[in-house]
Image (cartoon, rainbow, N blue to C red):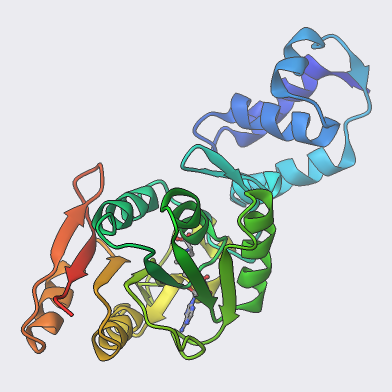
Length: 273
Ligand SMILES: C[S@@+](CC[C@H](N)C(=O)[O-])C[C@H]1O[C@@H](n2cnc3c(N)ncnc32)[C@H](O)[C@@H]1O
């Protein structure tokens, strides 16, 4: 038996080498186990209790670099809460820029038909079907696990009837005309040495092939073959020149964008179809 204050003190110590804010993480994990808001802990720090077994297990997993989002089954994107677990990539803040770009580029298209390749947790398709009026959204993923999580989130955000989910490779199961194709595909090269926390995320969501840009290039080919009006993709920090050169064979130029840290992060390709 320990007081909440002692539990938090000890677990904060255990997390100090892995977390940027170990006290905050310990509080979030304890409040998650106790089914209370973190602020509740502050008013009850002298309460004595058995340390919850699932809390101890989560502290151990976090010490081993398991991302906090997987332990809390929660990640924030566009200021909304999404369910996540180890079946999907954890939403990254920079992907909000990709969503913003799509919203601004499709303003002039009436009832746009939007397709996302690699829906993962669903963040992109869900935000687009929420924020783009009259959009018809189709979301594909090669992973049934990812589609299952995306459906949980679509339901949570009340857009489950507005998105058609398809399990397929790239666009293989999509037969509709596409105005806007969007993707944050796997783009890391196969043998890249990753941070420990990334090792918890699905390989399918991370690795884009031997060189990393193989899936991105296939997506470009598909966009051109299907005469897509706008292609919007996230990419790796070192892939701008490779994509630029790849587009030269089609005599096309993309507009590249950077994230808030000034790192090359994606591109928009607009065509005149
Ligand atoms: C980097 S994650 C992006 C997930 C989500 N859209 C996001 O931005 O957080 C890439 C997703 O693409 C899926 N994927 C990988 N290869 C694919 C393929 N050939 N066809 C369709 N989806 C694929 C993975 O399963 C994964 O869910």
